[in-house]
Length: 577
Image 1: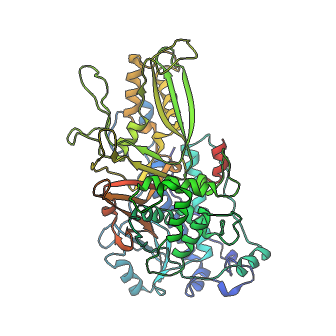
Image 2: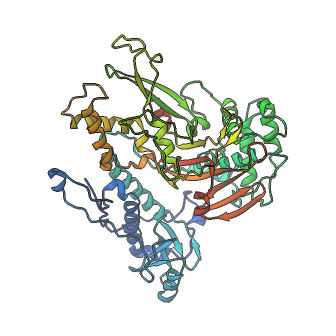
Image 3: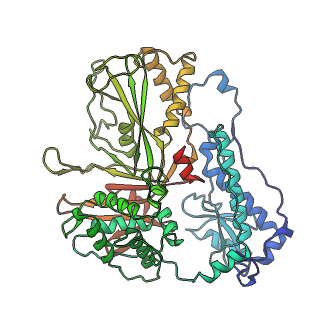
């Protein structure tokens, strides 16, 4: 099943909004004074809707099946009978054919130009067409204001098309999934008055250096990752934990987080010294007290636990505090008996995932010593995908480690495999660079990691889908030992066909922060990269400099932070289910 962008019906200009968010407040009609006469004609609204639909379809072209196959594969007669869907054209400048950077589409004509070579700006100046749409983000740009502008009608069109696109993708990729649909919220007169009375306009900053107060770089990088975490930012900036109204007596990490966000978004650009945050951590976690260099990951876990502990309505199970809403996931462990194929599952809550960098040598098979996730040239793992493959690959248990409850045999051979039952909105990875087994040492292996990560193949639902397809290939029967030759050959054929597991948008994550460690274990230094308003920045204590994505992806990462591209509508209920 596939789909392609279709032309939407014309915009009804009689239903345009004449005021902004607050009813009765005509002083906030629009963010741009030049847009109203163009909107009345309706042409730029209709063009914006068409371009937004195209942009969303192009962004999810893999899931929608509107891309040609990457490689020529042998197809069955049934596959050959399916009609071929033409691929969507890549957005590119009509002047220089560049598809990199910011590509703008004129909302008055069919011109598409790049920003880097100023073809988009030249077109607007020569033709007098002031409005264009930045295709990748659907941003509305006004050449007269020389800035991106906000307008409720355009924002409404974007929201409608986003919901429509998500529903199409859900029907294609998750036909049996029942999701709670998006419902728009409107402020009434009473709510609008409360918001106006309690709102003060301030300069929106959010980018600031942190002073090193004596080997505190480990804390600074974690705080920067907290600040640039979209979910934590939304929680604390919406005043859901206010230090002025907090009823917690004593040191409260939630209040420290609230003060931290207040300082970063105060408009002040000079470096900030988080003395109060450090003192509160010392009082809450005695093992972190003092001016010795600490591990950033240990500080991260300790900070999460302290924020959770002082949050209101904290629970041991199904906690709805900001930490669990942001970082909490569920890991599924399946133990399969090799005698009767009985599967025993266990579930463990997690806040992050720690990945080994060194491969484990496996037993010889057919005279060949295989090492999963090892690059033959570099003799070691070289990507985040390799680490995740090993993390979720079946592991053979010892003969005395498992007793099967079904076949009643003790000391039975079995395999154990991990997968993600519930993936959190924010994924935190620790790459285990520090070893303590044979003396303290650091692994300097460079691990490649992507800017966008698809976690589909590591989920329990994807494994179940793969198992069902395998059962169909075996004639609809799942009986027999998992180690039988027919099962193994079928599994190999399923794994080689990438069409078995199509990417599902709800499992796609975008990188937003990276922590690096330079030097030795005890004398090293922590730095970070963070994404702020679409741009990458290097954060080295008080130094904040612009960075490129290439610099980020080329760094030797110690911790990685990814955020879901499409967030669940009601995540707490999803965790309970």
